[in-house]
View 1 (cartoon, helix red, strand yellow):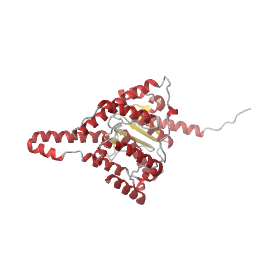
View 2 (view 1 turned 135 degrees about the vertical axis):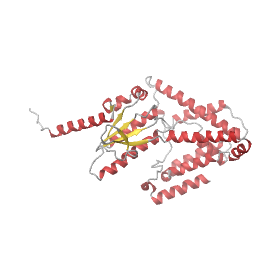
View 3 (view 1 turned 90 degrees about the horizontal axis):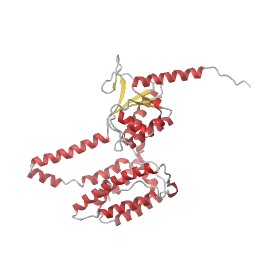
View 4 (view 1 turned 90 degrees about the vertical axis):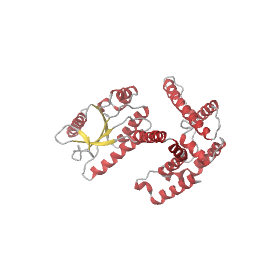
Length: 362
């Protein structure tokens, strides 16, 4: 009952207080209706099959490993046993059906399992009931949930997670063997620290240090200068599926803040440089994130450039055809080289605009 109350109160608060205008993120627009059929979108062209097979094998193995591991961990709490073969058949069947109805890859996520477990669900019938109510919600109530704050959804998941922590056992371990307790807490805090570092990597805005050719963090060197019309951002960690959403949102937030600052000065933001010197690796999801950012900037007439990608990162960009799509001319070795290219392009553009117009001679 508590999760439902949280969602309802959160929706009312967000709607009445216009939470989105105050920086509180909400779910956003939701369309009514059940997912449309996607059977007609199935494509068995031989040139796509190798890519689909690789992606299917990787995601399938990860989904099976996650689902079975989570199922067993919760089964141990109730001194029960699960059949791994049945779990695999269930995952395969629901993904086959889901692929025909525009669904994402389905597995047994830890967060949803924890919420169901704490709600008192004991059999698979809970999923049937949930599917029925989910269908009714999509058909009739979907727009109402568009005002749900994301923080409310996070609170529901976090409350379920905290319910899985065995405080009594930790205290018992402290009384029995303090050294084991210290190891337990070190492992717990280490995992939390690692997750926070990976999920929220460091990003910063760079400026040129006076009387030098160096570009450093504005917060560390307040006296740094900014090139008018150019925003230089530095990413300081690998880009992959766990942090790509945060990186995309952080880049777009930097851009919005920069635009708000320069509008008062009468300037416009024309170029965004992403310094990837600190990015040691990138996966397919990370590359797709860069593509999404590039498309967003293009829609706003802002050019994007990539600075000094490492060898492994560059190899993946070339293999994934990102370089062909993004353009080799937009990848530079240094920030100064990118700035010089922008100035050269602007100079040529002005010369072209000032050139006399010649009429056709018939």
